[in-house]
Image 1 (cartoon, rainbow, N blue to C red):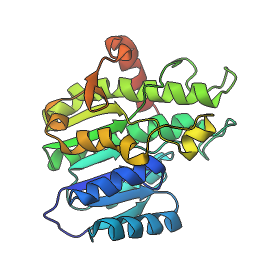
Image 2 (image 1 turned 180 degrees about the vertical axis):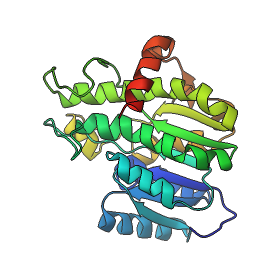
Image 3 (image 1 turned 135 degrees about the vertical axis):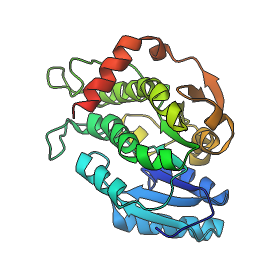
Image 4 (image 1 turned 30 degrees about the horizontal axis):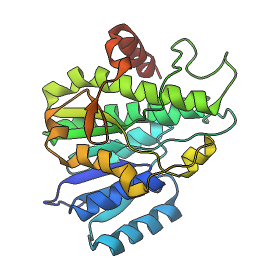
Length: 263
C-alpha cells in the first residue's frame, strides 16, 4: 500500500448494499478507502463506481474471505502502512446450514469469528496507527445466543436464529474488546445500521424501509465523528447511544470471547 496523508479505512463486505454505501460515504469524506471483498469482479466494479461517484482516486480493494481465519491473517500480514478505521460489516444469511472448508458453521464463521479475526489480526496495526477505531455493524435484531451450541450442531438450524445470535455476539464482543483495546488507543463500538432492502435481509424474509445510504449513516458517523473515538464498548442506533441488554452479562461476554479465541 502506498503512503497516504489521508485517513485510511478498511470496510469488509464492501460490495453489499450497506457496505458499498459505507465505503462511498467514506470516500466522499476524502478517506483512503480499502474494500475488503471475496469476489474480485464485484470488487473491481464497486471500486470503479465509488471512484466515479466521489472523484476520490484513493479507493482500492483487497481480497479476503472473513469466514476463514487463514485468509484474514494473510491479509493482515500483507498490510503495509497505517489503518485508522476498521469497519466490520460483512455478513451472510444462508437459508440452509452450511460449513466453511474448516468445518465451521458459516454464519458463526463469517458474522462472528470474521469480526473477531479481523480485530485480533489488525490489532497491532490499529495500535500503531492510534488513535484508531473499530466499528462493528451489528443489529437491533439480536438474541437467541446459545453459548453451548453456537454452530447449531444440536439445535435445528434456522437462518433467522443464527443471524440474531451472531448480532448479539457482535454487541457482546464490543464490550469484551473495549477494555482490552482502550490502553492501545483503539476505540470499538457496535451499531444498528438501519433496515435496508438487501440480499441479506431478503434471505431472512425481510424487505427494508431505508435506503443503503440511510443504513450506512450510523456506521460512518461512528467511523468519522469524534464520538466514535471518545466512546468505546457502546452500542448505537440512529446516531445515538442505545441501551444494550446484552452488555450487562459480563460472565457470558467473557465466555463468548474465550469461545471465539479457541477457533
